[in-house]
Image (tube, rainbow, N blue to C red; front, side):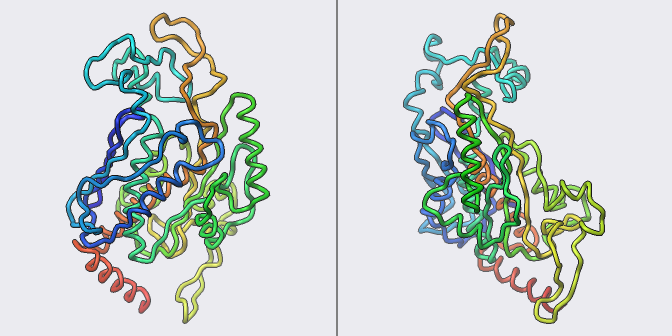
Length: 387
């Protein structure tokens, strides 16, 4: 079973990612891992932290001579900003006068709930782990999952559907998303240049007023075979697994599969994807409102998952809060932050979706080496084609 964990604080020495269950013999391209981390750091509206960090996935175990060896993989991502925080966040007791307390919790952040849960007298430790900086570690292990899926001909990418009140209306093709992913510079991750410029205006307005802005990203999984997931048990349904994976990302407050939101207020006659058959292609569908999943099982169409991202909760014009110690009304604490992270969140969601689909593939096709997995996968495809 594919399992993964992360550790580390936002301003700590490093982030660590741990991945077990990866088959042996998978070629690992270090430049691909680092480009995925680079993609996560891009996007108009990012804060000063991105000017400091240049993430690199340093392999500690599980990969030798450029390939996985079947043992657990551990990756280290150094935090360059650590040099500015060593006295504020020392491992030892340190000097209390140099600690940077978060004295008033930010509305919308984990500050207050986390302080109450762990009995902290301020929110520094909550902020450090709840921060979206942690998602860099997920992107690193997600890149490995993407490399596994590529061996099966499956690709995972994302694009931005909306930023603030500006949204992209036309349906987006896989070729458009593929072209977008190859760009050397990422603005807001939208396939339409005119719409992207209007999205930029939303970010500019938020920046001008000391606010922040959210939006919607869509992750697409291309060339997925039918049969991943299951309707047999609630916790084996592919749509449930994907929803949980994307919802686990910081600031994501809703997840949609296919046209799920619009489907809720539409008649069934326009929602459900009609089925046809062609001798050369097998079973076909005229549309993909289901988002590639029916009954908790992939149906062979592209899987489409949307994440709805709330605005970042750290504002340069802080909202009202309460001081932890005095209980008096104050402005919420301010930490260096972004204005918009929708494109970056899409990249992090790609990682979570890739890890989920890779796990389902390994559970279905099995294999301790990548050659065994591919052989089993091809055998299954032959079964499907001959149905």
